[in-house]
Structures are given as C-alpha cells and as structure tokens.
Length: 344
Image 1 (cartoon, one colour):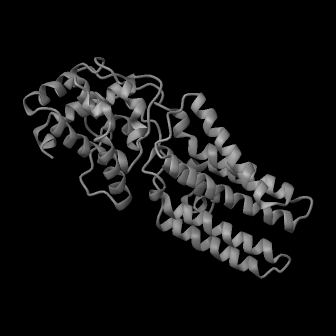
Image 2 (cartoon, one colour):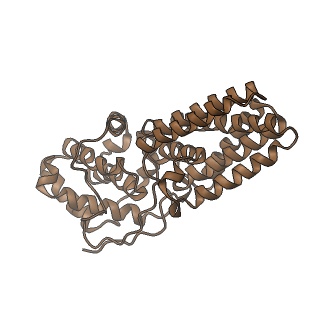
Image 3 (cartoon, one colour):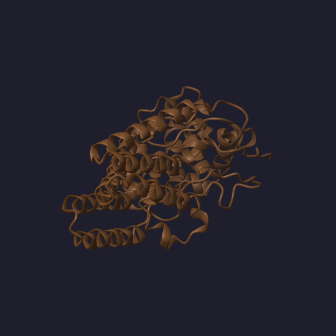
C-alpha cells in the first residue's frame, strides 16, 4: 500500500494563531492604555487589533473559526487584562508608562516565542502564555472550556491590577496583586490547558503509532462536551448525508483526519471512536468494509471539499494541499476495517 507524504500543515496560520493574537493584543492593549492613561482606550485598541489579525489571517487562507464565541471571549478577557496593566503603568510612571509597557511586551513576547527552550514553571507565570493557550484552544481545540484556568487567571489579574491602579499611590495593594498573580499561576500550573498544536509531518509507513491515534480512556469533561457537540452537529451536516456512500464515508473520515493533522490533543484521539460509530450508523453493513478498503488503498480518489465546512461541527477546518488530509483519511480507513475497531 502506498501512503501519501504530508507536506506543510493544513492551516499554519491557525496553528500559530494563539501566540500571534496574544502578542498583538498585549502590544496594542498595554501600550495604548499606558500612553493614553485610559483603560477603555487600551481595551478598544486591543480588540481592534484582534479583529484585524483574524480578518487578515482569513484573507491569507486560515479556515473559518470553529468556535467564534469562545474565540471572542478569549480575546475580550485577554484585552481587558493587558489594558489593565497598561493603565497601572500610566499611573505609576506618568508620561513614561508606555516605555514600561513596551519593555514588558517585548520581554513576554520573546519568552512566548522561545517557549520550547524555557522551563514550564517560568511560562506558567506569563499572562501572554495564558492568553495564547486560551485563544489557541478556541482556534484548533475544544473551545475555551478546556482552557478555563487560563481565562480565570487573565480575569483575576485584570481585577487585581485595576484595584492597584485605583488605589495608587498607596503601595499595599501591590501585595494583593502579586499574591493573586502567584496564586493564579499556581492554578494554571495544576490545571493546564491543552498543549499547543503543531502540524504533524510524519511519513506514515503503517497505520499505527502516534499517527491516527485512538484513545482507550474516557474523555475528560471538556472533551466529552466537545464530542457531544460534534455529534449533534453531524446530524445537521449535509456532508454526512451525501448520496454517494463512498463520498459520505470520506466526509466522515475527515472528522478524524483533519484534527489529527493539527495534533490537537486530547480531542484528536477521541474523535475516531465517534467517527467509527457514525460510519456504522450511516454506511450499510454490507458495503462499509469494502468502501473503507477502497479509500485506504486509493486515497487520491474522491473529494475532500467537506474539510472546509468542518468548523460547522466545532472542528478546525483545513486549507492548502490535499495530500496530508488524504493521507490521514487513508490511515483511518485502514484502521476502521479492523473488526475490533469498527465494532466499538
């Protein structure tokens, strides 16, 4: 059997969206609030930057947002948190607060983009990392519920920072702010959000290993909620009712294939079980195995256009080369021909 080689990821802008948006919001929100001395100016500036970056990414080929409400919530909370810090700098260093904001933005951005080389205990202290996690989970994961600790940390630091700014020049509120910051960092440490996804560029020689994973354990609460939403949306998804049974099977396989490309655990390894159940329900028993074997042996046949509508299910969409998507479809089709898997 011949497997197609993966080429650069299905939607690289979505894969990098969390860090890019976090730094954009932080830069505009914190510096604008510090320069103007007004919280609302920082919030509005950050929101405009966030909307602008998302629209630019869409123009450059990023798929539609799978969780628009979750994305909006993460952007709003992060904007308020960063603007609050800028407002404090404006009060603490009149006329030069923007310089402090610029220094902080540069430092956190540098650490965020050097995350692979930094210890986890240091990253967990960074509000920019919290924002990145919350936004990225909305872009390519289950939505912000899986990153609730990061959102709570952003909101908590915003509230305590505003208390300090309001009580300035009294210094004792700083003890409250730093205590809250350390406590919220501890919360994020003990309840971390999903890891940042990456495009999986493995050449698969067999449908085993880390490629095409299938979870054996029960999903956590956030993942179970996301799976239930996907299942509800499949019932209304036109691609799941394609009159061509082979194409219908390909469309259903996309539900597992595209999230696998994003390497977006824990969701990706729980979706195959859902797909297997949908294949059993929507493809007749006497034709299912033959259709799956054909897809596994000839992944270049049929269409993968339905990948663009996956956001309707709350899943990340895919753009660019079809080869990686077809690869994963073939891998899952081969795995689902196993009686032990199709009987799940």
